[in-house]
Amino acid sequence: MSFLRFLMLLALVVWIGGIIFFAFVEAPTLFIVLPTTRLAGDVVSVSSTKLHWIGLISGAAFLICSLLYNQLKYARPKAFAASHLLVLLMLVLTAIFQFRVTPKMRDLRAAMQAGDKLPGDNSRLEFDRLHAWSTRLEGGVLFLGLGVMLLTTRRFGNSN
Image 1 (cartoon, helix red, strand yellow):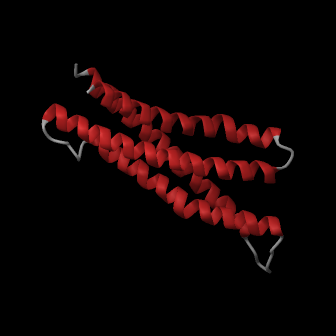
Image 2: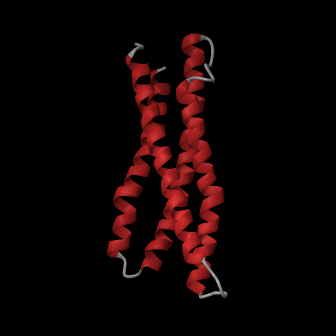
Image 3: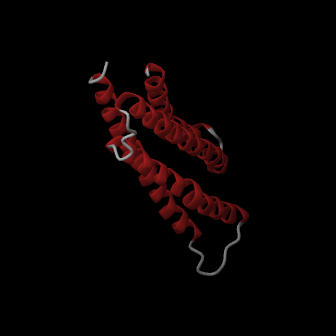
């Protein structure tokens, strides 16, 4: 049982820690250190894709371990526990970011870099709009993750 608790906490720490590192250290640093915003954007694009996959895998690992933990401890998985519902919402937001927002942003960046401008082209405005949504989505995942961490630590604090 303690190994399942360890895996659950590890999954949360990896996911939430990755978001915090990415948002507050990596992305801002790249735009300061690299010589062009294009290079920084290229690195951020690749890094965010990896971060999302880490999140999707960590979320699945958390859910599997938590359901198994509940089954072993309480003889039922408690599928609709608050922490499970929050992790599912985190997974949905991460999937939206990864499979809907990121490809559109990548296409817009490529078009802007290639200079493919049509009359009335609002690629930059659309990119900025999607970037704002990406920030909201990632922020939402972070705050939900902190909530899951709180619920999980409380849960483990009450069990021995």
